[in-house]
Length: 526
Image 1: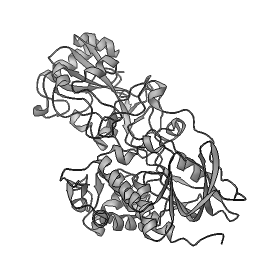
Image 2: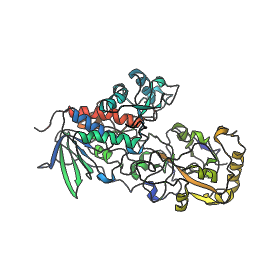
Image 3: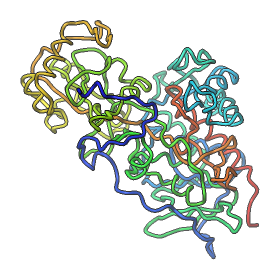
Image 4: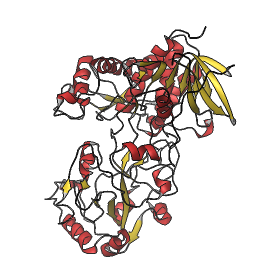
């Protein structure tokens, strides 16, 4: 039987394949450490604040500002050094959800909260959490305005699915900078960081959290951090807010929880699941560990994070690891179309599209970078300067090159006749098999020819400690853990990725929820 005839599609994926060989440096870190069991209360504390925020990205900044404005003394603990700090907020487009109406948002999220949209009984988020998410998401733009943002750019005027109720009420925006240009994630975080600095909030750099500290009742009363080679115990008089991001670069967690392997990530390389383990150490329940949001990515040995491909129009196509096209390329840049294409061959025991290949000709090479350069690792954040004509990356060996299609096939390790047939069919100018618009296609006829591997990739993980409508972290028995809150991608509420801007919108909304409720906690131990 051929490799295509035996493929069985599943929505969530349960069979883990070994995958093709991408180097360990490209795939992430070594095995995760043991769970961060809670630390004992020290005889003396090294420092204290009312609210400790652990992790300084978008969610951490918003939580810190909100708690401060509610009257709390706030300290932010960040594992990175100040001169090398980055976050997923900084690396993204800076798009955030701010729906028109609460009810429209509730209607929409009620569908997005289903594990399976055809099974209403699979709803995974309680009504109170959906409502508070809706109420705060609707306020996102107003809150930013109250903080000093003057204008916004509409990124999306509707949600992702016209069949979902409330779709026309879902809006996504970007901030505009004072000069009138559209701000991306780097600009949004600089604005939020400015709010933190203006308030004089204490940010402790190079201070990774190790363990939560609990009292005899199991309430969280502080954080043990490592700074300058010493373990320090920082007291939280009221509460701790975990905003450490996901487990993108924790190899062991990825292998355990994600429904395909290998996967790569284009986010912050320091998102190694620290907050997840700290919360587990005090009994937190986990949720949404297999939720996926992203698309194909490029990943190269020797570089710590992945790159987001720039597809668009032109003389290129995407083929599986056997050299055959499998879907219109126009559908591979987004979320649902991409994951539906990632299937497991249960007869030959392989993932036929891990890796896939981006194949293009000289015309496409000269047309511009094959990665996005206005956000992500090759964007203004400055992690990497991708060459305008892709020549430097060819020299690095990141992009394969050959003078003929048959020679390129040999470089790729696929059957030359198969790849040549795909190119010939593509050059006919019509896509009878997959329906790609002719206006987006151009013949692959200009030598030399190029190929680069595409890996299933995520912008970030969503799983982590379960939270409730107050942003409290919930234990395995369904009870809130006193003094412990979370916001952002660490235990995101999303079961399905509902729309571009959902992650940053959640950072804003639940950052405020967590910050306000943490500041309102009574002081413990006095």
